[in-house]
Image 1 (tube, helix red, strand yellow):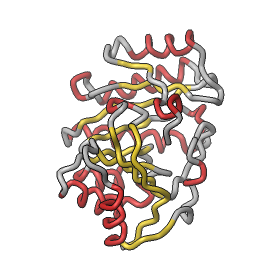
Image 2 (image 1 turned 45 degrees about the vertical axis):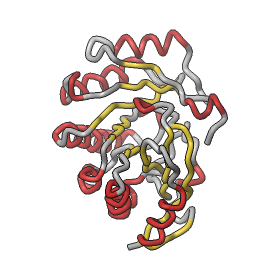
Image 3 (image 1 turned 90 degrees about the vertical axis):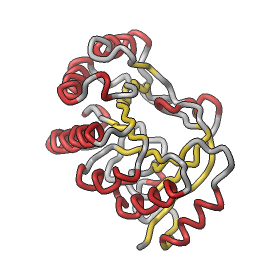
Image 4 (image 1 turned 135 degrees about the vertical axis):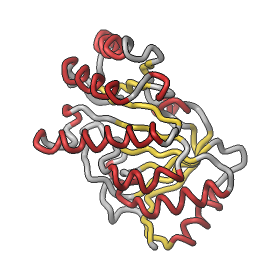
Length: 237
C-alpha cells in the first residue's frame, strides 16, 4: 500500500477542543474541495508531497514523534482521500498508545467508517455553502454525508465535536438551518464541543456577526465557543 504525505511536523494544536496541545501533524496530500479560506492550498493536489510505502511512512512517523506528544492529527488536504492508508497509519499510532485525531470535512461516510475504528478524537467539520467549496447542486449530498459521519461517530462513542468556519460572507439563516440539522442528530451529551471558527486574514467576520452565530447555537448547546486559530496568532505552522 502507498500513501502520499505532504508534510509531517510537531506544533501546538491550533483549533478545536484540544487547542494548545503538543501534536504531531500528519498532512496527507489531496482534497476534492477548494474552500476560499483554505490555508493549505499547496496540499490540495493528490500528486503533491511525496509517496511512501506503508512501512516507510510508519518509520517516518517514528522519526518525527517527540516525547510528551499528546496526539497525532491526521489532516490534509483531506485524509479521507487516502482513507485506507490513514486507517493503517492510525492503527500503527494506536499500537504505540498515542491518541489519534481525524481532521476531515467528512465528505464520504463510507470512507469515514473505514477509518473510524482507529480514531480517538473526531472533528466533524460542517461547511456552509458560502465556503464556496462546492456548487449548490452538490451541496446537499455532501452535507448528508457529513451528517451521517456525525451519526457514526456518536454511535461509536468517539470523542466528537463540531466545527463550523464562518466568514463575513456567512449568513444567519443558512447557519441556523445547519445548526438545526446537527441537533436533530446530536444531543448535547453526545458532543464534547461546538466550535465556531472565524476566518483569519480573509473575509473576517466582525464581533456582532460572531455573537449572532453564538446565539443561534447556544439554545441547543450552551458549551459553544468562538475560537480563532491559535497557530496563526503565534506564528506557528
